[in-house]
Amino acid sequence: MLSIIQAAGWPIWPLLATSVIALALIIERLLALRRSRVLAADLLSEASLLATRPQIPADALARMERSSALGRLYASGLRARHLPRARLESAMEDAGRSIAHELERYLNALGTIAAVAPLMGLFGTVIGMIEIFSGWSPTGGDPAQLARGISIALYNTALGILIAIPALIFQRWFRARVSEYVLALEQAGARLLDALRPNDKGVAG
Image (cartoon, rainbow, N blue to C red; front, top):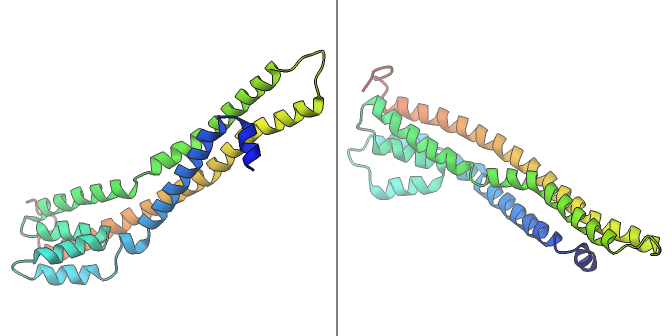
């Protein structure tokens, strides 16, 4: 394998670096988008209980924020619980937008890798073919050696496609998962909003 990598030329090294970056992003998103990290269970009852207190301890809010993305959303609502419903809703929406942005982190980078990796592989193959044919003489040469050189040059394209396929699959899967989480967060936020301001529905603040 090492001999093939060395024979494929310098363009294969950026591809190998790209594959490492793609793998790191996939692993990071798999850990960050676990359901327990986004939608911790039984937070609504805890938030409703905290809302009944005249003063909510700072450590309780900090613990809720650390628990999950949903905890951050609920903590933002609890901090603004004394505001009119419209302003409370606005504060929670701001927190929700920030959370959604964090959930989508690195997905554009993963999509870029999926799009660029085949082009990088094709570029490496073209460079290899140029080097092969620039040293080829029409009056002589070993056809078997030429065929082997072309085969090695094509490893760049093969590696680029091999990187792009899982990167694209995971990027699409992560986007679908983020959309599902965002919808769940919106519904959970609406439930807390109704619990904090049950009598202010439709009333501007």
